[in-house]
Length: 206
Image (cartoon, rainbow, N blue to C red; front, side, top):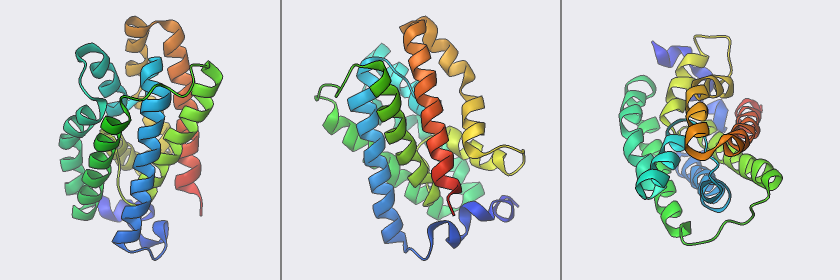
């Protein structure tokens, strides 16, 4: 039922005539952009993303566990749900994207943040994050369990994927106020606004 309701996501027109190999290369690029955004802009500045990625950042700070490994583990139930609604190709590509992200965040973890300037964090971090996530979704996968829900909800509600993601992350950003402070929470919300607008721009591009 759901496959018939999401032709814009599953149809080959969303990724041209690309083969799975070429899609995989673009998903690799997308995961790399997300890893750079997380480790070189957001995580070390206590700026969180939304969804499973944001929850993983919070847990990483609390328990000193690699953020990429947390993303991979916490995403598994949602990716399995995506398998039933979106198919085996979606599951394989999403596991590939999550695995690449886990590996690259581990590699980049020892490096210092590129900048601590709030405006640069919001703009550059948000753009890189949005470009990466947008490419991954556009070419048949996802990095975040909330993206699976957003893809499905966007076909049942008059909302875009990015708008669905933004709505679902209200509680998460609220909790960051108590963990990191109101300033960091405001930076997180601004960064995510840049990211979700970038996601929609990439996904909805003809």
